[in-house]
Image 1 (cartoon, rainbow, N blue to C red):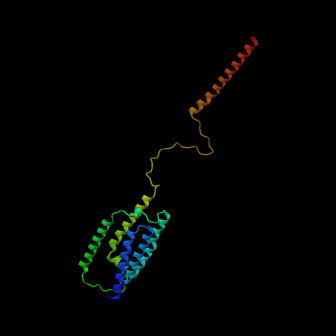
Image 2 (image 1 turned 90 degrees about the vertical axis):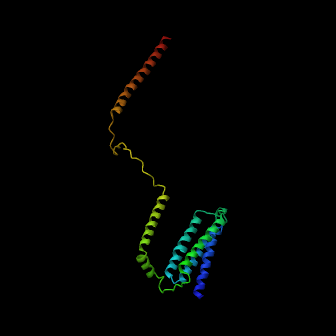
Image 3 (image 1 turned 180 degrees about the vertical axis):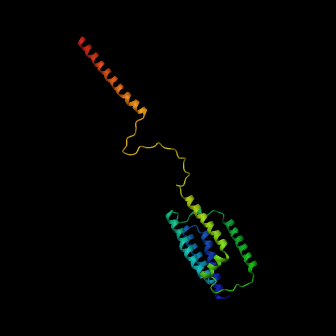
Length: 222
């Protein structure tokens, strides 16, 4: 084995080991830090494979954005930083069996697909120019399909996160309001009420005057 293959194997062991620690630790912050180690080991593997552009994209996007966003989410939501029993579902043996079965399937597919064949490194195979030509020429259709899928996911997430988006109620026609500075025209009912008010007032005043006169007459008789 050459030195390049040894370094690649060591980086693979570090990536797998840190990934296992991500899903087994009970401290959420420690899981995020082990995730940084796993992503860094993957970036180192890309560098060994002479894919410098993919390696820097791995560092900038996954290590510099995803993990930092995860840490900010932990701090802003006041999640428990210490050990939490809620992070253990109790199905470790089932999870381990599924992980081993998945790894066995992947190893079998790789061995059956390549076998003892050695893939030669190509100079500039992982550069930005070669990657762009491969994506936008050979794999342009899957790239566009993934773009539409990601756009639909983003729009759906925005709609679900907004609480002010509700179906509009049916509009009812409101009575027209008089413009400012102009008095409203009185209706027939208002005119009748205004006409009845003076009559009621006069009747009340005449009754009070009769009562006063009656009281004065009784006093004179006594």
